[in-house]
Length: 470
Image (cartoon, rainbow, N blue to C red; front, top):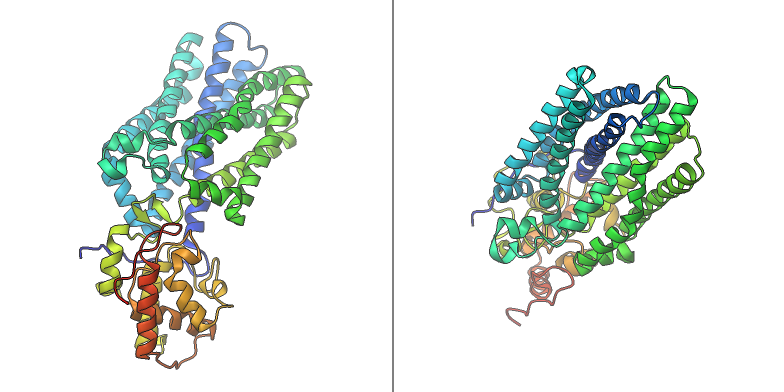
């Protein structure tokens, strides 16, 4: 079969998903700040053109955009390139499927991104010399381009969780305008407005502006926090359209995902309550420490939300199309018969340390099927996860992997590979001794074949396939 294999990059005790997740959260935070910053600038420039912005307003506008350019444009661009660099190392087949499916959509998004950058730098260079109407038009161009960049990216990201009719038809637009497209887009737009406003409260406190004009500017900026009141309703809409098992993960099925959801919701509630009750209703003045704390809470909310968005796709990276270990559902039967690493051309690192060919085979199976989400003994370490299982429990639970843990993909190899993986994990747990006995009992392999047939190749939560033979 024509299955693509890619070299796997080892990051030692650090789980590969942590690298993507950490960089991705930082990039998403900056990108959404760039969009929300445009909203803030447009709103304040519109007030300035009508003489309603007040003292220090023009100074704040120019200073805020400098912060937007230096922080979001520079760091956002670097982390954006970093995201491509890390994802193609960790999950190249997922990125390949995304680009293959949406290459023209990516091209359109890049056009809007280029327009955003051009308009932003034009305002940075010439904004101080422009009249208020021209400034507003240029800022409007920047904001529209930035939001449409979000529009196109949102369709691709939401497709990963809810591909909709794309699975059956292969239609790009069926995948792009998928069931979670609009709730996700609206929610992200609300987040952008909130981040832009919160960053503005930090910038205005960092500038040499008199107390009363500063208070007035913060009150103006806080108007963009009012739409946060819609977040619970849009969030409920999103939860209603995602798959049932994904919803179950965040509503108690997975303690980790539920906790991250609580972090995201809790931080958002604290920000919204402070903004609506403190800043807008009580007209409280916030200093730079409080403003920075609110931004830190917003970063925590972003981190929690992005973790949940990634986690609810399990066991897929593209729902029903590609498992998290880069194997498609249609390939499982052939890999069960042929072996998952039979055609893997890449040698093992430090192969001379492995005590026998069976353990070496297990290392190759681990690398191909497990390494994208697990480490040996570090974060999400496989030896920790199976450390309390007996040998027979390992055989049974790995054979029934998608039923043992429904957010795991089915085991994709044959009986010999399964036993090799079991022996590899036990060798790791035994502190990697220089010698290790080979486990080649025919009765054991026959039992593993029976368990694999019994488990089937459907994802967890689906009916098991009927056994092919007694």
